[in-house]
Image 1 (tube, rainbow, N blue to C red):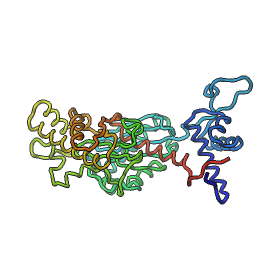
Image 2 (cartoon, one colour):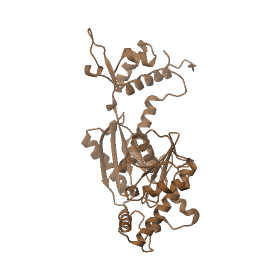
Image 3 (cartoon, rainbow, N blue to C red):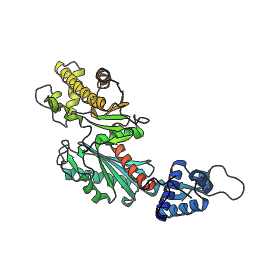
Image 4 (cartoon, rainbow, N blue to C red):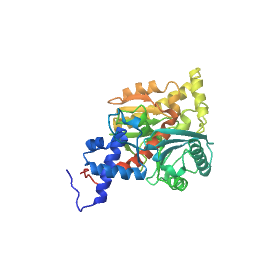
Length: 385
């Protein structure tokens, strides 16, 4: 067992506090006696830690009915993690909409909000829609802005560690935007900005099709697809945050641009016009030969893009989301073609979270940040009495 050196009592208190709080968060209401048993700490230490956590608002005394069966004599006091001591936001900023999810410190959802956004909206207009959606959500749920402990944000583009969008072709005025800094001025709490596909793979691992799998590729399928990957349960961003940008693979062979792949007229489709894309697919199902050829080109391109990532990472599971996931005929060809191209074909499933995937993943990133603050302690020292 590692030992503390230098007699740092503040570090020891943080370790003991994290151990007790973790036990309460995962185990429900508990007595002091039970906490002594599960943490290995002495009773005086547990009593002191619980008192300190009550003062911070992170722990409350539980009502008698939460404590289980009553016994004769004076009932033992029970304590619980006060998940309502703070709140978290998960925000999606996309081409056509912004969405926000609000939760307590345990990740339990308290509400949601969505605002439509014109695809040509400026960066300032888009951010104003975010602020409006969040303000409405906080008002409807009765949560004070000061209660927010962290905000996670999912957005298209290559995102640097400080929340700056280094490159984004999907949103006007987004390249070079200091998104994290702009949003921190509004929320006055930590803001974590992540690529949308990366946020979505985190969400599917947490509450979606990837629950129970630690090696996952999430494909945000559209005209120019993107992907997020978990390797060994950890998000893989790459050296510069550009991992998974499979929509750029066509540049290697100087092939047709994504907007030309689904064209039935020879003129490229508008890159963000999902309605135009859906019409091409509808015409294909109705038997239009040119539309069928366009859909075949689209599926072939998507298969090649995904296969390149599968061959590099060997994931257990590929989850398909984004607007193209809702179009008939995408999933089965993907399964068949991946079986042809890949040495060990992965399972292929549709996203279980649908449109909520990006905001849900952003919420999980905010929760991870707060949990690291509450439960992680520097070093590898084990809690001691």
